[in-house]
Amino acid sequence: MMRLFALQATRDLGARVAAEAGCELALHEERDFEDGEQKLRPLLDVRGDDVYVVQGLHGDARTSPADKLVRLLLFAATLRDHGASRVTTVLPYLAYARKDRRTQPFDPVNSRYIAQLLEAVGVGRVVVLEVHNVAAFDNAFRIPALHLNSAAVLAPETASVVADGPVIVASPDPGGVKRAQLFREALVPLLGRDCGSAYIEKRRSGGVLSGSLLAGDVRDATVVLVDDLISTGGTLLRAARTCLDGGARRVVACVAHGLFARGADAVVLDPALSTILVTDSVAPETLSPPARARLRVVGIAPLLAATIKMLHEDHSR
Image 1 (cartoon, rainbow, N blue to C red):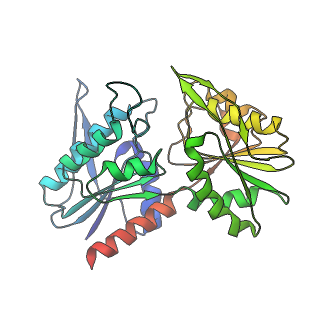
Image 2 (image 1 turned 180 degrees about the vertical axis):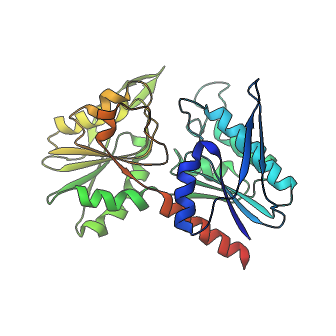
Image 3 (image 1 turned 90 degrees about the vertical axis):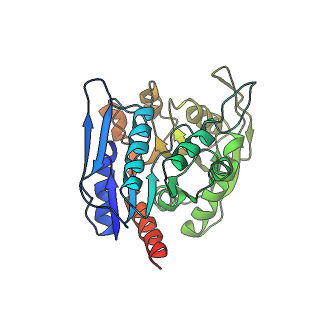
């Protein structure tokens, strides 16, 4: 039997996934103690079941990424202790994945450490939407790890936004060129015409951004800037202004995860970005109402539900 749980911090999205999958969310308990510790348990027998747990690992006003991670680890371990045949964690956003390689002496590789923690508690499979570095994600896990490309949901919405005329799909930094290329491949058949490519040079040292070299011709085109996340928004805004300076007609941002840290309000409201498309992997609750109104939020519940149903059918054969 398949069981679908959604921990409290991601319950709204989990409910939408359950509705798309045609099932009910399984009942569980989350209890917080006075000193900040937690207790989590299923409220039904999971012995022999194929279990899926939806939990976004982004920080919000109430809960940190570390707290959400610990809750997920405790719950996954509990499910395995009580006989679940397989536990699959469905992570709309994977925290700590941005630090995926060593760039300075004694650097950590956080993405690998998170993988080891999930494996240690008995998680059998991981599903993640749009990670920072797909190759690092694949290499971090020894268990099956499925990466979902956000272009599957963002490209159709983008096709409805861009008008007739030339379209350029661009990455705001060299590291995202492959992501932009995959997005372009998804967008071209939807538009029925070819799109160009571009990227913007970016360097970051000590938290300071520099570099604004545009590689590619964007004159008189609608530029679609593709990125995995928007935090403060500095990278996207810098790239948008560079494209406009290069003669772009307008700039549309397509972002998988809207973390919207402090300062993002000003970026979202900046006219350099004509449209901002973002998935609902993270609720944009940190933004002011005027900034939130500028977003076009695209739901990921159908994608997650279809993935869960596919994995369960494969497991049942």
